[in-house]
Length: 122
Image (cartoon, rainbow, N blue to C red; front, side):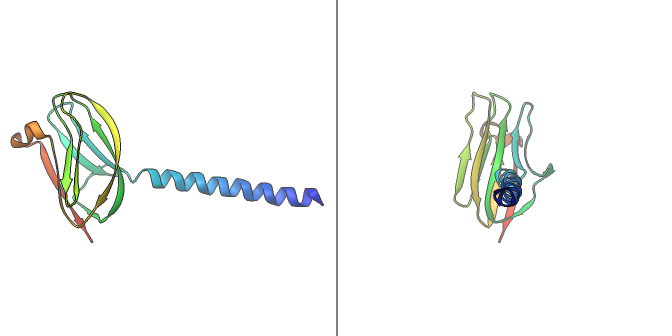
């Protein structure tokens, strides 16, 4: 009798673990990345492609600041986050994107063209 219960319970446990692991991976990363440096480049990408438009929502963004002469500054409706000039860092932010236009830039070099925008739709 006990053997008949153990096998279905073991199968259920393995199935639930597989579902939990698969779900955890997709919730942690939306594929949204921001990168500045090491040269004079700055970009925001979604799944490896330049981000132009995205739907409103809460996202994880992985930010790589690869130069101590730059920073990565993301701003828009209700959002103002940045890394520091003088250091290199890799960090992740959770951001709530509301409809509107968002700007990403290197503050010291924005006038030189180190900036971009993307639009968030409802």
